[in-house]
Amino acid sequence: MDIGKMSIYEIDVLKEIGNIGASSAATALAKILDKRVHLSLPEVRILEFKNVSQILGGEEMIVAGVIQPMRGDMKRHTMFLLKIDAAHSLADLLLTSMLNVKRDKARPTSDFNEMELSALREIGNIMISSYISAIATMTGLKISPHVPEISIDMAAAILSVPAIEFGKMGDHVLFIDTEFSQGCTMVEGYFFLIPDFNSYTVLLKALGVRG
Image (cartoon, rainbow, N blue to C red; front, side, top):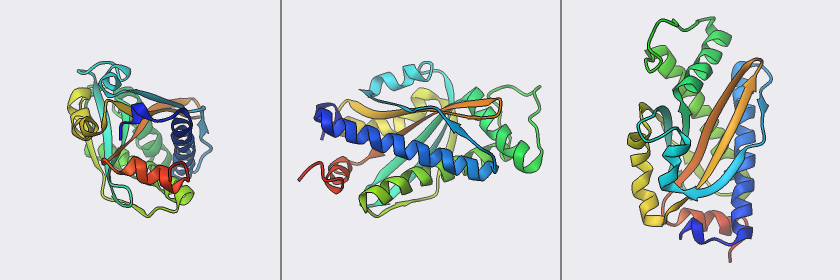
């Protein structure tokens, strides 16, 4: 099923799923930090997969990606991507709030220590799991997130993982641009589902959109 060939109504339903999932992720982030987190209205778009890297700043832009496998009624992965500055801001927010640990500003911007990587992986895990849980609650589907992986690499390298699956499905992807803020710290992140060939159909059937 090619997401680019869905009806307008089906696309609107998927966009609403994106909005609800992003709101759930923001709530999870607020619980981690034990502080109020503001979520700007997510921008949910259908766009060609080949253009995703351009939104991130180009194929050679270094980004942080947390990818989490899904099992059950929906399979493959969910991914949360951050530009490097946003990744540092998010890691700093968690480490400062919980451990009062601040980043050494003298280090290169692409350099993350083990503590920062662990923080990002954990934040990604909780936010993605909340996102998946929101979908499962809405649809009644059984979806289980598994252990996430984090990678700091060029956008093209990180996006090569889902590129294989999207190649089977078509040329378009449901892309969710979210902006979180806590106090003076603002973080822009990107969610998207990376389902297998049948999962979009399963999702739409569960929502009563398709027979």
